[in-house]
Length: 190
Image 1 (cartoon, helix red, strand yellow):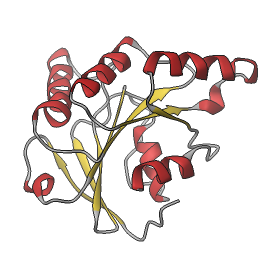
Image 2: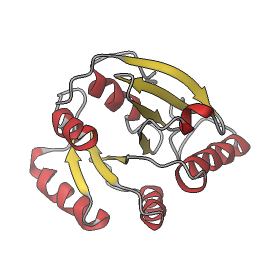
Image 3: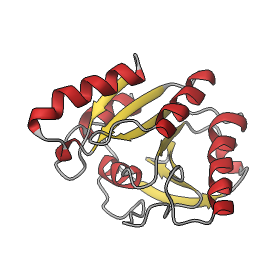
């Protein structure tokens, strides 16, 4: 696992910002609302409250930028899908996500697509994956919340996930049981 010496919240963004153009590598985290993006970030850096977590889907409403070891950024994007935002608010979030990942021209070292391993990939997850593939992003799929899968269904659910997402690296993960965090760290920080 990469040694994290410092992890600092830099700012929340809703559009272009000089920080995104400063040459530091960016590792973006994307997934549907309430899939555990912030919890994965917190587990990676070993700080419980760095990225804010909430039981309310759609809590993240901006692009949150974290500077790690003064060398690279972790980028926590709003979740797509279910949210307490208004219809117009949901559309703004979708546009913000699409702008940063697909249209802004910013280069991400990796894009970490987080999928609920128990639920499996939703249509919105698969649409996001396809859009990232079209833009030739370097994608890592995190199968989060594997601790919620019944033992008898574990292999079947991960096999189905693999069948649907193709040849991308898939990392089974549970932030509560500390499963997969070291593997994810090695994959994205290498």
